[in-house]
Length: 231
Ligand SMILES: *Cc1c(COP(=O)(O)O)cnc(C)c1O
Image (cartoon, rainbow, N blue to C red; front, side, top):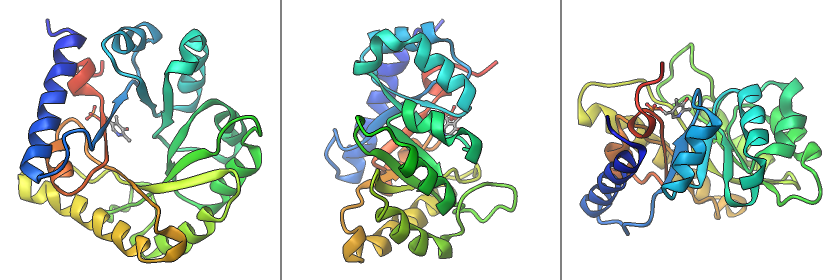
């Protein structure tokens, strides 16, 4: 059986190789361990292997796990990467460090109003429906600029960049295409003075992290390649 130590090493090796191939600094990509459906103990074990950033999809599961790991709170960074409904923003604003899945202005406004004053601003990304799938959540690419300018002006949020979940594709070339499109969209935003400091492209998962790094990903979200198949 592959242990978490082995898989962390394997992922770091894949990231390093991809960075070298891309001609990028080898420490330029943050590894977010996607811990949805995993137990608090599995997160503890991953933390013992040197991981400190964890991504969760489901609000209640995230809140419960963050609570169960309260003793490690200062050493962990928690990211919400799944859908967020209006009635859950208050709890999330108090519990996590990052939200990647902002897909409408109203959610951002609520998070800004509800972020407790003693915490640093909530770090956020806008989720973009880069593959244009009718069923997927996320802003349409042509909506992103207007929303980004408004989110960037909210006092208790810090807009960091863009996130996407492209549809799976069979060839490396096909996997790169949506990552390239997201990077180009970020470049367009950064041409605006108010958005010049955006620095995050949250893209790439277990099956496409190389393609994402080649296209400029700064943060990959990896679940199954770290923890094994989800049951
Ligand atoms: C589950 C999930 C991941 C991780 O996917 P793997 O294929 O298990 O690496 C990344 N991002 C989001 C938004 C997810 O829901």
